[in-house]
Length: 154
Image (cartoon, rainbow, N blue to C red; front, top):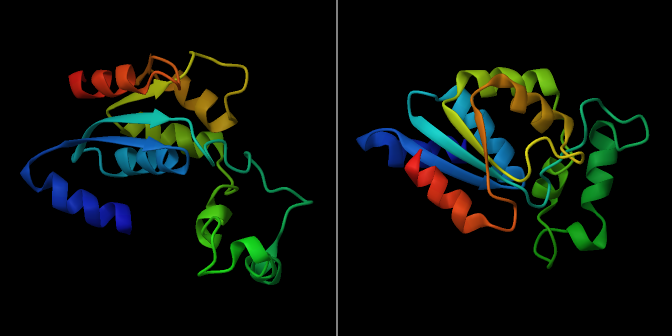
């Protein structure tokens, strides 16, 4: 909802370009696929939470509301204390099915990917969207200036 609100403000004058890092890269992918008339290109940059929690639920990971609430009570995740926001930290491990990501990538306009093309450590959702044909690899995750310049030129 926050991303949609910001998009509504910025896209009122025409299509925009998005850049997202980490969790924001996945949000940019979903937003670009769902709102393709408002977004002409997206840049997906690695960062914290980029890989997500894999393609399938983990049987050893926290499941259910009770486990999630217990996780929020740990000292480094309590609201108002320093450390990662508990809800953002939870999103870092969200399940990201490759087929789901492919569908959003196919609906989106150009997706620019910072990082080597076909890297062995690509999360499954990223490896899947590389095959959609609408993606372009630009720079590396450490060469963000070049990647941002490519986004502006897209």
